[in-house]
Image 1 (cartoon, rainbow, N blue to C red):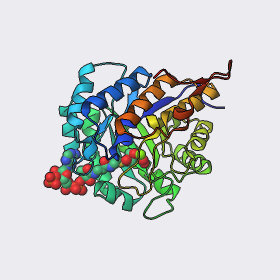
Image 2: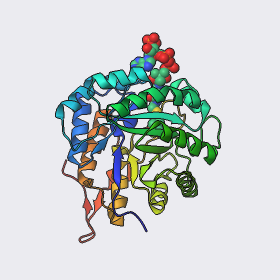
Image 3: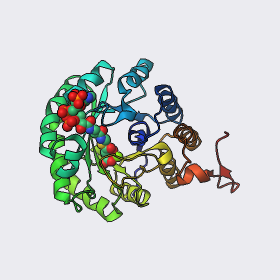
Length: 312
Ligand code: HMG
Ligand code: MG
């Protein structure tokens, strides 16, 4: 049986933009996030407190977060990526109250992404998560390349479970399993979920993050739903990719995910037309055509057969 309700965790402003060459102004990012919020998204990963030399698009993280935290909207959660204590200090100064640390099931990828091995990254996250816990922050941890690594290929599910358990020990609210380069298929989802749950991670603490590089993201979501997973990441407009993951194309588009969930009758609180509006805004800001399936085709009214597209 599929879950009755799921959370959509929006990564557009962070994962969606981080690899885009066209600089987006802070004002446009605030406007984009405002549209996402208006569409009903409540978990919006806003930015990253990483090296601005490595990710220039998110160099305005401090300023952007100050805008968002000034809202003081108790309904909203704006997690930020934090790779080390320096990032945590910046996040605290900007008023953040939720973070995501990020490592991977592949050492080679972790080294290229954050300059540490997986073991070193876990040691670096320990004081960050301790402090975040003391401050009462919401804490997420990513395990990237769980479905395959662009540098070393096959990733053993035992490694994914080992990294997830060690992150769980450090104290996190949610463990997000990433198909960073979009190579995964549904049987892998079932295998990873079964092994994580078998190792003692509660199903309600597991999220999936699929890149749609090879068109398998929605099939993987369905597999996750069959497993009882209740949180899925998506990026409005289908933008996204990690600069340290060659071949990583866009994330699963939020509008494609919303359409699937609506059709399955699974509650999520997000309005499809509102997401398409936000996706159009992002595409215009990036000066790119919208590539998501539902972004282009629109929703569908089963009573009349009409396409449903928001007014321009
Ligand atoms: P480093 O070079 O290994 O370490 O960076 P460092 O400590 O020697 O720092 C180098 C420079 O960065 C120094 O500045 C530091 O001060 C500065 P310089 O002396 O050259 O002027 N620095 C910082 N600046 C601002 N904020 C900080 C910070 N830390 C150091 N927090 C570091 C280590 C992690 C910082 C670097 O490798 C980095 O920023 N990497 C970017 C990682 C990233 O954002 N990747 C993309 C996100 S992960 C992803 O997309 C996957 C995901 O979506 C899930 C999935 O798809 O599977 C989450
Ligand atoms: Mg990603």
